[in-house]
Image (tube, chains in turn brown, cyan):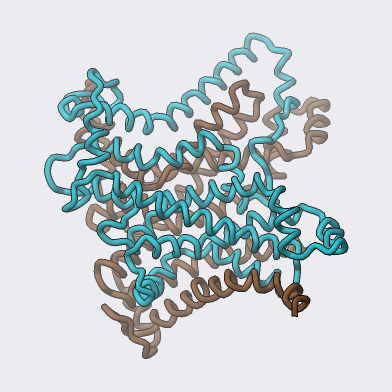
Length: 290
Length: 304
């Protein structure tokens, strides 16, 4: 008995967590998928009716806006964060004396809640009292910086705050990548008299491809899940000009009482994440097993 | 796992510049200038928050966004802490700050302990299917939580803990164990399995090996896991806003309610003070243990 117990103990230790994950991750995904195929409104119904919720979803102009915003936001956020992160990493890689302190400053926004970030930028971008008022006060009365209240520009205000929050983190990722490149190759290139910028563009950056992929995955994942920042900065407004899939889902689930729409939009979000994550995880696990 | 902070500097690339002419020195100054400009960009919002929180409303209306306060007042801080309205209640962020503490402390402890034993099993006590289980758990880290919000809300209701602090602890533990297991698994994998085998030969069992060998080695990864989980739970908004009710909201939800409450005059200084209060615990953790914070951030993203 004691022996049996001892040999099965590892499984028994892992079992509660595994069962919890099975139920609360996979079971719940199944529930959401099921409900997304029903006519559920305020209360869930369980008779499957096909893809009516998805038809409704893609007919909805609000969802259309949310998806468009996700592409604009995601594209700019990922692109600019990566470019900025790479530039900062290369600049910091030049034997900077105060590197530690600078890195700390660049990275601290990542420790903040998105709600705090949103609150801060909401104040800074406030047209009446923020940057706009400040520059006007400097003697440029026609200066306009009203992104937060301008439906066409509000999504860019969110991009601005999101880049501020995570570009330092991308910098840290790239810096680690730069440092992991074989120094022998770099030394050899320098002995051959190849200029520093060529060393970067021809040797160091190409060898960092896996880091680019990692950064892309992390940022894409953050972009799709973006919720708090929008709530704190614009509340999805003006109107629903800055809605993202996450805020659409939340509105349907908790203020509109439309469970069917909430479930189907959540499923679309998950499919987008799957499309990005699954190939990555697969290649990672395979590489590890080799 | 790559430890970014310990990444050695590379003198080689820059070393060439040591033989510097006037042009090279100018280049060097330009480099520092650019780095300084970016440092100011990252610091600016924190600076503006801090100065705004120390100004009176009168000064905010008439003054400049980035000007230093003419007269420092802590009234906004007092109001934010104990009087600001988060809707109909006007008790400041204080009760919500303590809610966050009450959610985060047990949440961090439980998920870290579970992660430690799970990681120990997956790394050192391989059985058939253990890797599949680990992969399934790992995958759970990456789902958008929107996909579990609706059933979780119903389940918490059925369990009778909807809108309670234990309910929020439960949710944070469930969706935290994927990451904590990953941290500990990746750490314990680097410990040679011969150690476990030798201990087994000496008659030590599963628990004794964990307790006497692995746990004493685990301090660095415990710190990483605690910091990661604390930051995640403290900064969480989605679960907090979905699964709380008046009185049990975490500080992030209270902050958002204060900022977006429409009653009365907009007190920007109070908003900023409340935001800094909400940010303080995680900022403190970052300043004190930044190295471990970064390790947690990169554990899932940098190959290692």
